[in-house]
Amino acid sequence: MFKKFVLAVAVILGVCIYSNNVYAANITYLVDTPTYSILDYGSYDIQFRVFSGGGVLTKLNVGIFKVLNIGVSWELGGLIGADDVTVALPALQVKLNVYSGSEKLPGFAIGYDGQGFFYNKDDEDFIQKGKGAYIVFGKELFFPRLDFNAGINVNDFKDPRLLGFVSTHYEIIEEALMVMLEYDNLGQGKDARLNGGFRVWITENFDLDFILRNFTTTDKEKNGCERILKISYQSRF
Image 1 (cartoon, rainbow, N blue to C red):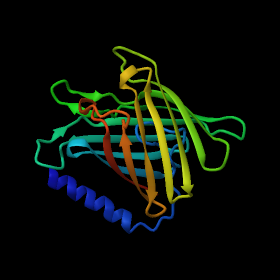
Image 2: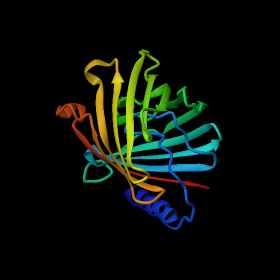
Image 3: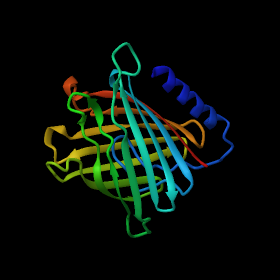
Image 4: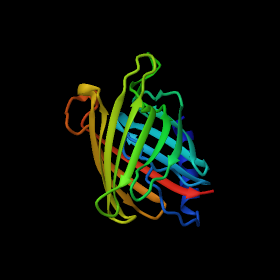
């Protein structure tokens, strides 16, 4: 499985390197929370997120219509290293841009993200649940390239509970360096998480995220404070 995964990554990166498309990347997700933005029609976003225990989370999202994105993700725990690989079930993402916003009103989107974190094969479920069904509002405020997002979500339909999340991101250098900060799982008490990091654009299409997740705790049972590297590539078909 590891050899097949490495081969797939090599093929994808090869396509990325030799792509001639010039494309300004959209900021559709920060660490664990979505923004109100979506991918443009005919574009795609490929992500590889390397997390605790040598795990790798792969995502592919596509702008299939002007207002609709659809994607799929797959977590492989322990892929890097000597531990056994934990293979999670693939998860679905859907995001609909309801309103793009104006000078006075925020834009907003509704969506579903079934991708959780740290799959438990015995329970056949994620230890940390994904975003589930959500609605998110966002707007640029105060000065250019400073965006704020806020949303609510339900991630457990067996025991539904309304949760919340807020985030902000600022491009210090446009399409070169961005700082991001988010507070996730509001309403879940001690399981709320404060995440942050930097996004560095290597090219117009290719960026790296250096992330600290749940950085207000050192409790290893909660996988905090977790250091994460995420690789992302956006372009058009």
